[in-house]
Amino acid sequence: MREDFEVIEISSNSMTLKANRQSSCSVCTSKGVCGTGVLSGLFSGYSLFKKPLKNGVKEGDIVTLEISSKELFFRAMQLYLFPILGLFAGAYLSEFIFPLNDIAQALMGLSAFLLVLLLLRALIK
Image (cartoon, rainbow, N blue to C red):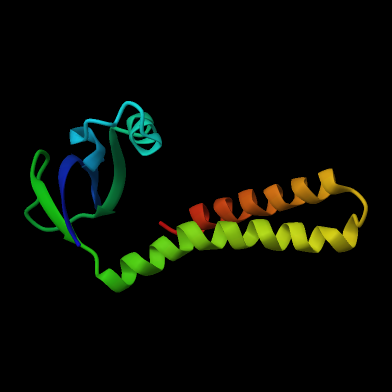
């Protein structure tokens, strides 16, 4: 998978890239009533991230980055599967700690879900 990014800032050893988020929902006639279309509207815009500086790159340039399909699949698995597994694992383990308290079990499941999200955020750079 290839994507183009705009270089918006250069520092001594890194460059800040701007990624425009794209959605196929922008051309669909049902985007106003479709759940996916509504959500894509909430998260439209751009993302900024840093990469190591490449020789000859200056502000305003467009650079192309590529990610292998294997890496893309692995990252998608991390971001989608691991939090759900954390939710189920937290809820399952809480059955042994709070056997008669459904609210505590649900809160522990949600806590495990959020913990996995925070861990992924810290580990994936």
